[in-house]
Length: 439
Ligand SMILES: [Mn+2]
Image (cartoon, rainbow, N blue to C red; front, side):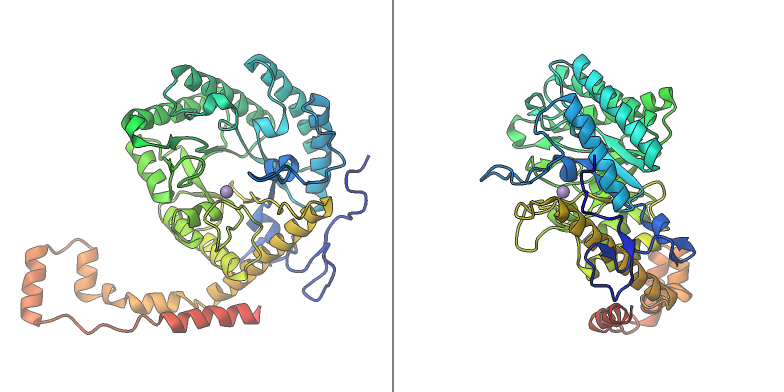
């Protein structure tokens, strides 16, 4: 039985198409910089927003109409939902999906029962993957919804809760491994604090590191070779999340000897909550060899919380694809739509309009970014701006050949520094516009 009987498989029709159920820019087989669009993006659909999101908010209940879902927490309903999910993945031509353990299968009355539910749904996920060819980009464990995690999971003050979380991640790793997952993600959930007065921050960070080392050890034990990813987020639900941004995560990983085992899963709306642009986070992580994957969404300029909206802004997608290309792509990661339709967009067809529109926005962003790179549109300005480092005293400093005394001697002889040159910000912004106009 089809969950989306009115929806065809979405096809590429080109930029002139007016069909909202066709791609105008995302052409999976089109080659950009020597790689197909399909391989650049490795688009992934999330289970949580797309199949468990109801549209509820703090002011009212869910609004979403989901005819394939009977609204119960039965295993059978979860299995039927999985079949509906794969129909959507296929019709969107998405090669990947991602889930939390508790999105795909209902939590039971004990850990044992929860694990059994998870296995029963994983059987259907395995069947559907086999049938459709859609693959698992990553798995993760939900360690924030159940009230037991009110103080956190790996950073809880309650040692038993840490043990429960460890058991839950052990199982999630096993299922991710069984389903051929290419990555495993840790998003901090409630790993942070509401008030430092009642918090032993050092002890909590030590516990978090211990937890990650145990996960690395267990992956090795079961032969899971997927990439571990941490997803930075500065706040919400806690006022301070320990994985607050790319720089904080990398410092944590380095301090606890975990850099060899982890990369970052960067999310647009988390970057902006941290007071950064997404391109900043991508460039920072990329510069340190830690760009793993992205959760593709956007916030709202006028709202200060994590709205997880579908991105359609060409400036944003151009910037993202530019820095992803600059750092050599996403490796085993992908462009994962951690985005939800608005509460008012309650019909099943809105799930398609949302994904198609955003996939197109990323595809156009990729084409604009590649056109800029082909002309070295930004690189020419950057190279010129830093040219004082290519020879003379700049080259000596970079090579480590001079010390403070040498530089004092140099400047005493010279008298003053060479004149500065314009940064040309306004010019470069209009250069970017030129490429957006042309593609
Ligand atoms: Mn988010």
